[in-house]
Image (spheres, rainbow, N blue to C red):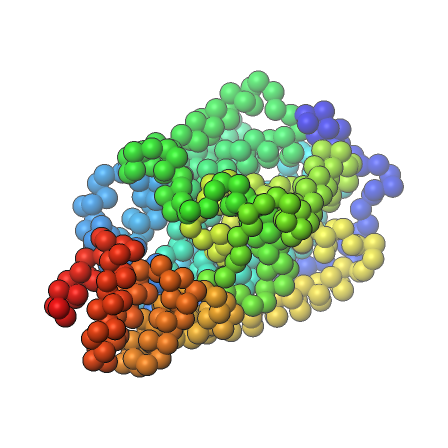
Length: 524
């Protein structure tokens, strides 16, 4: 790898000389402060309808009913791999109790900061030796690519689940520290940094790495990402650089040891939400899921909180084989782009694909998680995908269309994505619209029907609630919570014999369901 990377450092072949850009970005958009303000204004506009979005789904056990966040003294103990994320919820609670505005405001600020960090990341990559010694470096084209990546990241509809869904701050905050670490590392590694500044930036990078690890497990790939950056953008990975990277590689122990404090074993820590799926079933399913993720990034249509996603049981299923073949081809292309091709834009595009696969690997590989697909899992991987997309738009197809046309196309995509994000946030505005959206798009979602029934029951619409609980039980007759909820509804309707039967079934499936036992005793 090192030799291949070294071959790319230096001037490009004459046939690959980059054409002059014919439509430079407006001058004010080449200044970081102006870019930050633009991102902040855009994000605030498209998320302006989210500040009253209620606590939904996992928000309730993790925030509303979580006793730990209601006393800051609980955080004197630093254990737990998600310590920083829950500390942020505790600070929200300390200063504003359960005021929705404060939680959503912090989520939005994190999203804006991440958008700006994406911009800085891309600009810094263009200053690395592999790029700056070629025909790119600090050019107008580099400005367009950095700006496009950041703007697409901020307005993309797929980000709504990580921003509007309060508890998924865990994903966006981990991304914040992940990006900070990479940006600080690049600042310290650039030739322009003196020895004292190098040490300063690298200490900040190391601190950010630890904070990322203590926010969410998706940060586990961060030290590996830094090694990849060394190889791709600095050309060598000699003994001196490896010694420098050792402190970052040691942070790989942070998450396993943090989880040991909580559950007693490293494996249980990584798979706290392990399903009845085997590792192979989960992996086969994820091959297809990753293709769905790519489709959502390109065409964010029919977004859904709770996908009714079928599980794959064999590697010989046609959909699994086709998905695997496509992913292997994409990965092989990225290897060629980064380590073989002499084209700078292909190298950067390939790195974006690497970023996508590497950052997605924690949640889409062999560690089974209860839900095989969730949109917020794309928040960090989308950085790499959108970097590649921007490279294609302003680098790869420059011989096909003029830069002005590329800028107009970008503007059109940003407008469509912004409207789609705003409209998606309307769906998140109420529990009713959100769960109706789920059962409409995923009629086989037992959880969707159960949660819609729970909302309708709270509103006194008992017949409709009973209907959706019954639908949930049609899908999964061993869904203890749905039996319990249906029993509660039947009891309110005076249908006591039916209620008793469902309480008994709930307890037969889950003997530890204390509320069902108490209410059964009351009825008997």
